[in-house]
Amino acid sequence: MPCGRPTLVCGSAGCGKTLLAMEFLVRGATEFGEPGVFMAFEETTDELVQNVRSLGFDLDALAVEKKVVLEHVRVERSELEENGEYDLDGLFIRLGYAVDSIGAKRVVLDTLETLFGGLSNEAILRSELRRLFRWLKDRGLTAVITAERGDGALTRNGLEEYVSDCVILLDHRVVDQVSTRRLRVVKYRGTFHGTNEYPFLIDETGLSVLPITSKAIEHEASDERVSTGIPSLDVMLGGEGVFRGTSVLVSGTAGTGKSSIAAHFADASCRRRERCLYFGFEESVTEMTRNMRSIGLDLAPWLKKGMLRFIAGRPTLTGIEMHLALMHKHVREFEPRLVIVDPISNLAEAGTLRDAGAMLTRLLDFLKSQQITTVFTSLTAGGSAKETTEVGVSSVIDTWLLLRDIELGGERNRGLYVLKSRGTAHSNQIREFLLTGDGVGLRDVYSGPEGVLTGSMRLAQEAREHAAEQQRRDEFEGRKRAFERRNKELEARIDGLRAELSEEAAAFTAATAAEAHRERRSLEDRTEMSRSRKADVRDGAPRGNGKPGARA
Image 1 (spheres, rainbow, N blue to C red):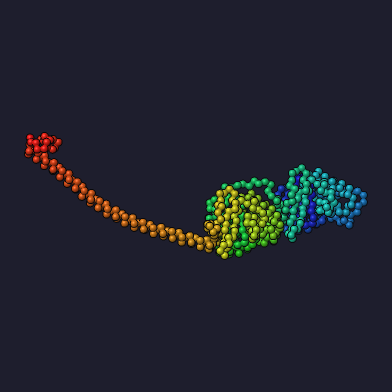
Image 2 (image 1 turned 180 degrees about the vertical axis):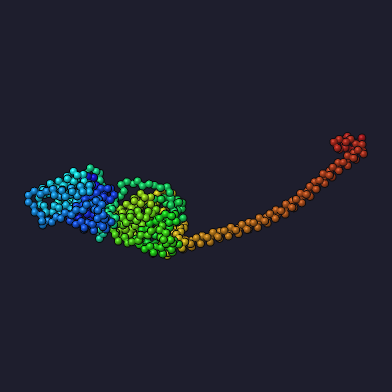
């Protein structure tokens, strides 16, 4: 609010004008060292003390410590009579005394309609309003002035908004039997301010304003990966799971196992000694722990150790904005590293789909700014497009796991695939999703000429393929044994032929040697004979005259 200038807070009955003004005063006195004066024209001081005690504000103690002064100015319209010129000098004196008594920096006037209710002269009313606002500015007081909303105007008199430096409009509307308080800064002189309507809440801690979206997308991006609790799913997501501080959406029709995957995320977080905050809108904590034991997950020890906190409630218990405020509160108190909302589609029952989408976007912005990993589950209506969500948050989700039903052979089985996962080289395969007594399992589906087969049809097809493979293997082994027998037979015959050949070679060698010996012996005999006949011998053979019958 503008320091040293007046702010007008206007709205209909029950929208929180007095509470906003009182919290402005008390926070200034207790947290910023700025004492304040609250001047009420409707409620007495005792009524004010009692009414704000539910917010944890002890006005009596603050008054004793001279941090706050409560003044009640009784104004009865029946006692007012216009006669001559009207001014607020008496109010200025009383207010100035209260301010000086504690050195006040803040002032609240609640509400102007009661103060000026008996006046009908608009000129005097406008003049005195200007005097009041000028008096506050001259004293350097940061003031909040409440006013009732009029017909077709921000205030009943239609004047206050024009002389105020800042105007805040509060609204309390009911849509589909669900009430929501909203705040809008109508004007703020000298500043660039938000002009949208901002939902706000009033609870035991005071008033909380929740912006529709973040001012900018400036979330820190972590390179650290955290496990999903399902090793085969981690493999599908690049082998290491999802990035810390990102958002995960698990969507599918009823009974596909969304909560089971969320429970594995929770169990893995607790095993890492990281706190997990689980918001459930369908099951109580005892139902959740019992049901998860059927798939081998025992969450009860984590609940006892304080690592897991389960917040269960129906979405129609409060409005959308109250759900968001409660989630903010639990996150600040518990400081988790993982937040699960199961399912987000039920939040549409507490408002419109558009409101639910805006609320979840703000929740994601808040959790990402805290580097908290988020898991949403979403119910997809049967017959609708699988790649959609009821509340329309898929575009801001980082990792989207889609579960689907596969109906074949008279049975229904589950399938899972990663629709998207930003920053990871994820699998594009459809895997059969199994819920067993040992937890969640993923198996490759059969894809062949008959299409994608799961369940018993996949088992039957695998059995047929195994039988065919075994038959081929047996046939191959038979051919192999026949070949080995034939090979041995041929090798035996070859060995016999080699032995026979060896014998014949030895005989031939002996015959060759004998023939050579005979020729050598024959030559020697002829030579010896020629010598005995005194014949010429040349080159190892006897020589004559070359004529038959000739003698030497």
